[in-house]
Length: 315
Image 1 (cartoon, one colour):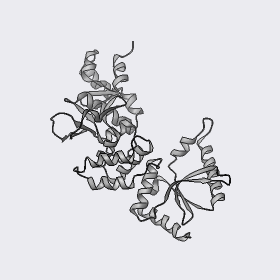
Image 2: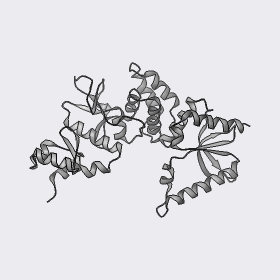
Image 3: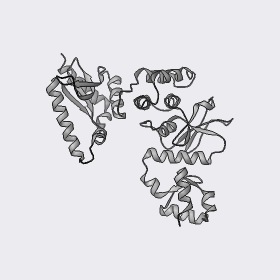
């Protein structure tokens, strides 16, 4: 016979202690199953199946926690800030995923718990939407509010992702910011609005562009199309410093997986990327600079390396 808790979990992601008791389990059995890893305690009074938790990414686990928070928090709340962005499918980076962000829709006070941050802010019913069947604020508001609780680099990653996914646009973000200029962190949001760029295809590209800006590397052209003699586009490069005849690529291995064909091994995609790069060199005579995740961990050194290449190859 199917476990009725599986049916509940398929709908809500999590099940509650009272639901387990209603299905015939007692507290000793619940504790025993948690110790065995069959169930996982998401938060006080809320559980999911152990295999679900084990298979989940940090972001998926955060959303399981969000579902548990919604089911165990008294009073009306809506997911907001970073949590709302994750529900929408917008990329985040460097966010604290141990706490769910909610905004209270009642007269409750702002406060922090071990796994929840309760915010209080004015809002209208029209601002609440559903994402993955969860009540959340819209993308524009969530991007702007997230910038108030994260660092500048993290805020840019989410803004670029939301723009790239066409979930919002620069005008909507600016209008949203204009209605929130009284919030803490307004200056940081202003910087995000100035530097955001929906052409970024990954958090790595956004972080590389942020690195260039913070460390005085000349601002590159973004997503530059390379064409052959017939005008056909043969490649698109992440960064281009035309004055120096240099292209830059962020190699996070994400693209290789994205372009991998059904019958190919990862090495095949890498080989095709090498062929693409050789063709671009033949057509343009530009030199390539490649950045990987490790380069982003030492931004000053990486910026110095890029500047040195640009200075050597200045036209």
